Amino acid sequence: MTEEWKERITVDPKVLSGKPVIKGTRIAVEFILNLLSNGWKTEQILKNYPQLKKEDIMAASLLLTC
Image 1 (tube, rainbow, N blue to C red):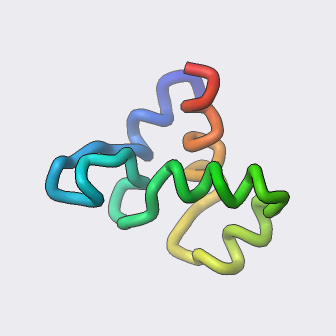
Image 2 (image 1 turned 135 degrees about the horizontal axis):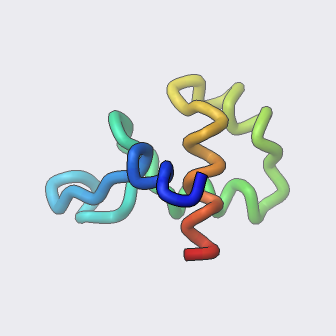
């Protein structure tokens, strides 16, 4: 999944002031990372935000290592 994150995350100055978001949503990568850092499990995020896929969360996490 080294480059696949580029298919899942986008930056558009018209959406959330240009913050990276999951494509097709207004859910910021920063928001997902905050949930994870506060102890949320992937399954909890997916249950509360059904428009997301597991790969979206993985892509957001991968940005930390880029």
